[in-house]
Amino acid sequence: MNTPVKEDRTAGDRLTRYPKHIREDWFGRVYVYLCVALMVVTIFSIVWFIASKGLNPFVSGAIGIPDLLLGHVWKPEGEPPLFGALPFLAGSASVSFIAAAIAAPFGFCAAVFMTQIAPKLGRTVLQPAIELLAGIPSVVYGFVGLSVIVPFLRDNFPGQGFGILAGAIVLSIMILPTVTSIATDALSTLPAGLREGSFALGATRWQTIYRLILPTTLPSLLTGIVLGISRAFGEALAVQMVIGNAPHVPRSLLESAATLTSIITLEMGNTVGGSLHNNVLWSLALILLLMTFLFVFIVRMLERRAKR
Amino acid sequence: MKKSLVLVLTLIVALTLAACGKSNNEGTASSPSASASESAPASSAAGEALSGTILAAGSTALQPLVEQVATKFMADSKYSGISVTVQGGGSGGGLTQVQAGQVDIGNSDIFAEEKFKDADADKAKELVDHQVAVVAIATVANPKVGVDNLTKQQLVDIFSGKVKNWKEVGGADQKIVIVNRPSSSGTRKTFENLALGGPSQDLPGSIQEDSSGTVKKLVGETPGAIGYLALSYLDDSVKALKYEGADASVENVTTGKYPVWAYEHMYTKGEPTPVVKALIDYILSDEIQKSDVTEMGYIPIGDMKVARDVNGNVTNK
Image 1 (tube, each protein chain N blue to C red):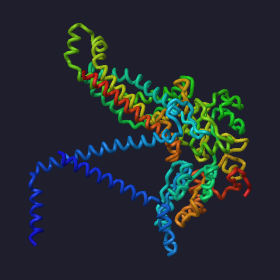
Image 2: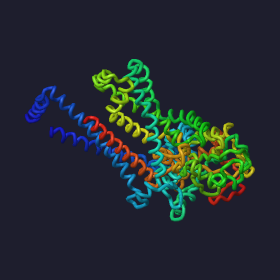
Image 3: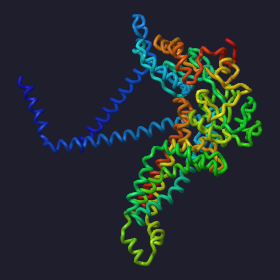
Image 4: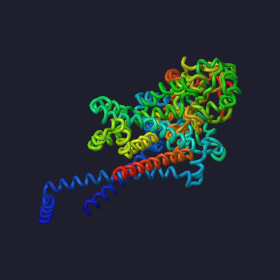
């Protein structure tokens, strides 16, 4: 009869033994650990899932890695089926790099304008405008590209308007906010004394910008550009709408081409889970994932150099 | 510190297990053929309303029709106990999934025998075909190409890249731009089989789009463009070309004069369960065939005056 009462008391004692703030602290710690652990588990399971699906065609011996990376014929329904992803690798790389090449000067100039030339106007008008660009959904960019850029290219250049150039133009607008905001951050953290010293030595504003500010902030600017390329590499919908999607290495910037992302979105709906065709699309996804890792690695390297 | 770490790990394991358990449950619950066949015979034997779940997957060309009819079907008080889910995945996916018993109905634009060939031929025999509608595909071109009829040979030459300019087939001096579907698309397979008579290549410089809306927009805007669309998508922005002199009209399809049409199949594995049969009969009912089927641009199966078998032989009914 006595024992249950006694046990109750000890349980109550145990609860009140720790003061409230300790218990809160403990609860908070568990909560944070739980969230972090869940995140890590999620990330690793995604990587594991993509890798297990994407490596399947190679493990089963259906195709070799060189066949996929260097083959230039994509004929998944052919006899025998051919899966050469070189056209898509070439397409993805060229749209992203050309997009970055277009966006980089614009981003740098916008950043210089906002921090060095007209900070007030820049912060009140230009910055919100560029941030607005980041919020526009990619399907809208694709639709604008299809309705404005493609007809424009078709009317003014040879070809049908679809191709690497149309994709690169659309992407350059999409990655402009990334490039600009990172460049702006880098420029605004520049010590004021550096600039003033340059002016004191008699340098003009333009000389200061291109002889001093540009070299000093170059690693950060490159970080912005690499992040921009990374985003351009992974963009699917907007590119798919304007690039034309022919599975061939294009002979010019104005000829229909395809990217890794566009071929995945285009074909996944028509393939059956578990089939070779479907698994090869996963291999393409794995390539995309590895490219993203590479970009993250490059950004890390650049940041380390910037700190030195 | 150590204690809390252990606790966290325990929680994670517990959560993971819970998640696994949940997905397992869903797996068994969504194995629809089992649940449908379990509940259906009992209720029909008792003479009551049918109840159960139906999962249909496959052809994206047939999906909008099945979705719309399923909504009506479930709203009907007679079938209120039945719940229907319709998914895409392509004709090939529909056939594979219904064969494997993962779905109750496999929607397809092609005959099962065309998908399961040679070593897999036995798989097709287990499936029962229910033809619910007919879809016709028209060759379309930009209105300014100056051509209104193409022979089969001309089409083959265009889609194989042999003919590169419209003037070679009697039209304006304008480069031909092919707007194709991805090679895995059911619409493309139907067009290749019936209009071209065989598979075609992806030519350099051709454009590929997966949605009919985009294909229509591109063909209408791009000078010299040629593509193909289901009859329901045709309007004035594109020009429907005659095939071997035959207009792509509903009348010509039903009489067999225009050959580029395909059945929309709903395959079941073995004879359908009462619940699934109720849905298929509902789609085949006059009420649906005369309203939804026609309104959505398909041709009612009953209007066809000709029939086509697996080997492509067309006979008068």
